Length: 234
Image 1 (spheres, rainbow, N blue to C red):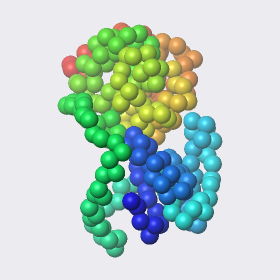
Image 2 (image 1 turned 45 degrees about the horizontal axis):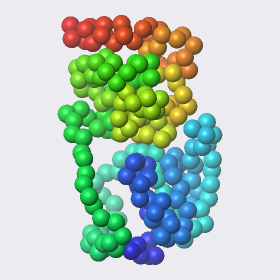
Image 3 (image 1 turned 90 degrees about the vertical axis):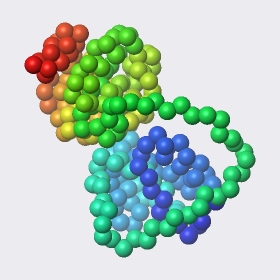
Image 4 (image 1 turned 180 degrees about the vertical axis):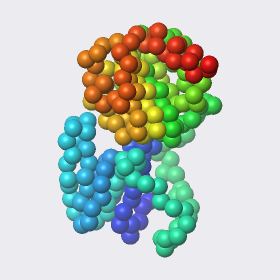
């Protein structure tokens, strides 16, 4: 069990933390403040609501601050220096209310989505799981990118859930983000808007994604992606 001596429990806003921290909040009887964008004094936090369209500033008066943070907005701290004490604690005995059955790990030679410097994401416009892999994978592997997907593509069964980029998926901030056949729904924009350079390819010149792109190409993705891959190889 957690000790009440803790003042702050903080984690990156990830699938892992979102899975167990609500349970921690229930055990401690405190509020969980998720996806914090900015930390101020007196336990005041800024977080995004309505898919990032509104920023809310809130103050927590709980005795223990329980947070997840939007990692792309915080610089990684140095491993050297500082005076914080690191304490290693033994895992408490299991309560035997649940048991571990099995795990399935999807291994890939591609970089992890959250850490990748280049991310190439596909949308529902790819039309099928076969097209998603056939069109995007050659370019992804050629440039050493991570493969992402919109929620619409995941819901349609074109891509696995773990590569979903968006508010309810993975939040990324790569050096280069390429949106292929992505319309630009708020849910998806929230997950990639901190990317340094955004390139959008869509055959609809009025697609919302072009409002967030640094470079846009109005073209059929089934023609454009193979041609881009060919030029890169040359």
